[in-house]
Image 1 (spheres, one colour):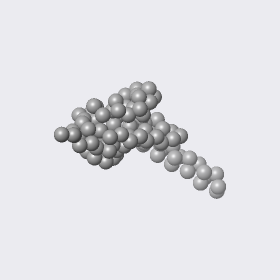
Image 2 (cartoon, helix red, strand yellow):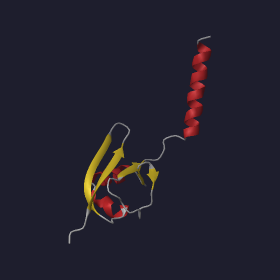
Image 3 (tube, helix red, strand yellow):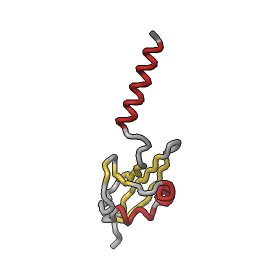
Image 4 (cartoon, rainbow, N blue to C red):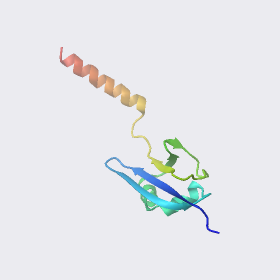
Amino acid sequence: MANNMLKIEYVLALPNEQLQEYQMIEEGSALKDALSSFALDKKAKAMIESPIYGIFNQSVELDYVLQDGDRIEVYRPLQIDPKTARTIRAERKRKLLNSKK
């Protein structure tokens, strides 16, 4: 009896491009077992020291059991804290408004 296969998408978002790959993975496979099936995962691990994985924008553990249609996403470390980025944008806006007065 053949095992059912799941269609899984793997997405790697880089600063200048978004790469995706599809594979058929055996039903019941955990994320950690499926990662080696994706060529993009090798690229991700070469570029990102400790990648964090998620499914549809939700961080998951490596023992997460994949479901048909899941999209594996690789999360890169933040370049800047979001609060700091907002503060910088607000300061730039203030300076721009003050310079027009």
